[in-house]
Image (tube, rainbow, N blue to C red; front, top):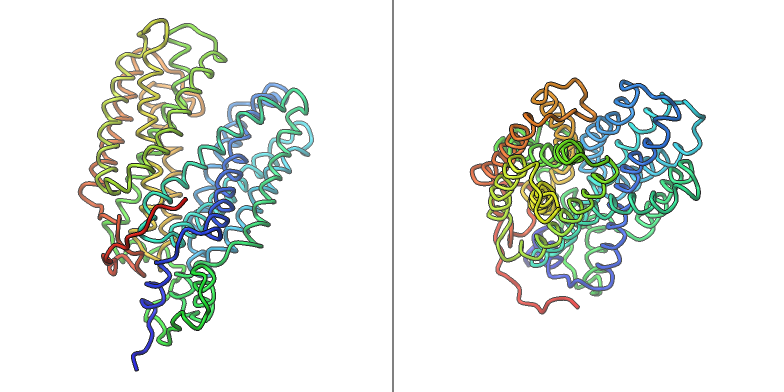
Length: 473
């Protein structure tokens, strides 16, 4: 009699439909992205109020704003490693709790307490990365191969939705409840953390990779809607199990290691660069108020969201690698054009905004591709750590990008570089070069993951015969 293997169990699990249970889990995990990113970006609106009231210096503001970025790098690497060692579910819960508690406590700080604020912002960033890193891994590992490319790309849209939600919440509540009331809405993330703990199962693929076959079999049966006796129970433990070593990411496949850093770091540096400099450029070139410039950038943020949605629709048709190359190359053209035509009006509307919005469509749309792509390439044993590596490169990119732009402009201010007319074009050419590097990393270092079943490791990814099924309602 043939002995059941992990491949038998996971092969059957991969045939699971996108049923009500799947959508419930997906919705809860979308809430993790939505509210964790909501908490992370609330500080932009809080700082606009307390900065003048607390008489914050440039150095103090820098510590508050960049502390969250540093916390995100640490959280992504540490929780990513622990997610492979201890599982994805509880790391998602604990990270979301850290983010929500830290964000909400900002609302009860005494006036002028900028040091505790900086510490709390570090833990907001830490908790954000600690929560979303294993959350993304769960969604990638839960989704059947035939739906994975589209569904996991769409999942990343909720990060942008969280950013927009923070904008709308602040606009509606700042005058009514003040900055403290807005800050305390950060506690809402605790609710989604509780929902994850109560209703989201541990990853079946991780359970199988750890040799916890009885647990994996039980969860697979629930997702498939089958009696448990109809689901195979493997008996042979995996030769390798998920560990917490970050060095394994490099030793297993150096090519994927560098590719992950390049596509995440380059995309983050480009996106944060035009968001950081864009309003200043508009104010400088067109002589409008910062408030009006900020309104223009609603179009840019909206284009980024639309780009992510559109990418999630076309990714199953084109594939991950080719789409990464295409979006990277097209964004180069729009970024360079935005820098060159920074002072031109078309029908009274800034051409710079139109071109930057087009850039955001491709740059930020690309995040819906690269985020799940990283996990897919590395496989189950390294899935959470690879997601953590990507999030860490993302955090570093948000710091390095503005630093380089400040050097190009000849400014010492890395929070809001003082753009000069002469610096705009070379700065945006630099952003374009970053995206060219992203495209080349996909082309020369990447592998295609679309249509390939999630494997234990990058060396074991295999192509399965496609399963024909009508699209889910």
